[in-house]
Length: 411
View (spheres, rainbow, N blue to C red):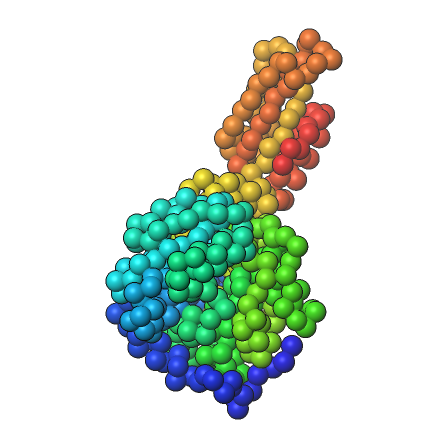
């Protein structure tokens, strides 16, 4: 990938445009402060700071680009109304920006969008149309409505004013930490990282910009491999805000010029990052918002000052509950197993004693006689315990084996 230098910049844009965007946003956004994180620093042997834009006005960074775009529309364009397609956060950004500027807004969102994002968008006064199973299908529907009603279409990432608005994050980061070495940025369609990378490199060319995308929606990595914008056949990820099949043509150009590296992370990596951010910093993030922290496991840097952008926190309770449970299993914090026991008094006590001696906290117990079909004298016990990690799970398994009790691990 090409490394940008201090003399390169597209002839149609300059760092002054990012500062102009920041001026427009002065009374609209919250300048989120960096948080130093000892835990994530120790995990990767760097000094890590979190940029928590999940605490932004709409729960995500998207208001930056949306307001910067809408505030520059002509009166005629404002009177036509705007339309956008979004997996959720751009929708809320458009909704709030349109409300503040007195513009009618329609947003097409995938039918699979978490209800928290749909309702939040409606609460800003936007008309929400639910269509399709992913962002790309919603995008095509929005383009149909644009033609039908003569709306002004506002792209969530492949638009220069959107990119410049997102670039204001880099100004804040550099203002708060002048000697930052690296910035890790989530990637969906590429608008966020385009703006941050451009602004950061124009101010401090030595900064390393690393993009992080989910393995199930790695459209940027695929496009870079092919050296052209490439559409994925499908996307599948818990990071719904980054579930984009095809990156933007403009964002791809910015990424090629200004981004140093792109890494991809697994669903387990994302879930783990969400869990750890809650536990260690009491911060809620959505899947896409956690990508940068998940990416810390994929980089080789050591003893660097690194900023991880947590880009959004709009996640519904049911989703976060499911993600946390999977992350607990992944980290060896939950252990579920079955054991067949003689169906007589006192047998459960043997199991409980082994677990108590190893400080494994029982959180669920299912005693079922019907599951052992080949014997009327045995009962199956399913036990879920809270554990302290994978080594603790191994201790429990070894203890049962030592007692001559066979157990079957479920997870």
